[in-house]
Image (cartoon, rainbow, N blue to C red):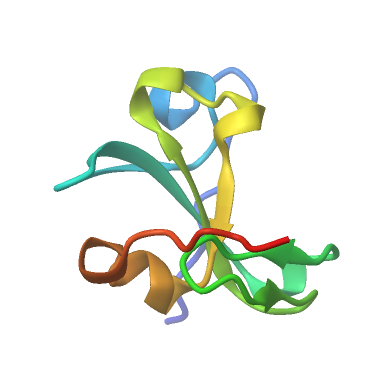
Length: 97
């Protein structure tokens, strides 16, 4: 039998204090809230802070922000999945203008 996707009910509280479907991650750089974004859900171009390359529309990636900010839009960054996973080894790049 195929699996059914669980539907979110409007009267249920969202995980992570009402800030959408994000998960908490701890790393050497602190605690982060991380949300995976499917390629089908992306419509804008973003710049990954890990490699300084573009994340084009249609590319699956992650959005991460410090857990202390609980969803501050200004602190959210879009990362390639591989860049996010290796950030402890590489760190963010300094953008050259």
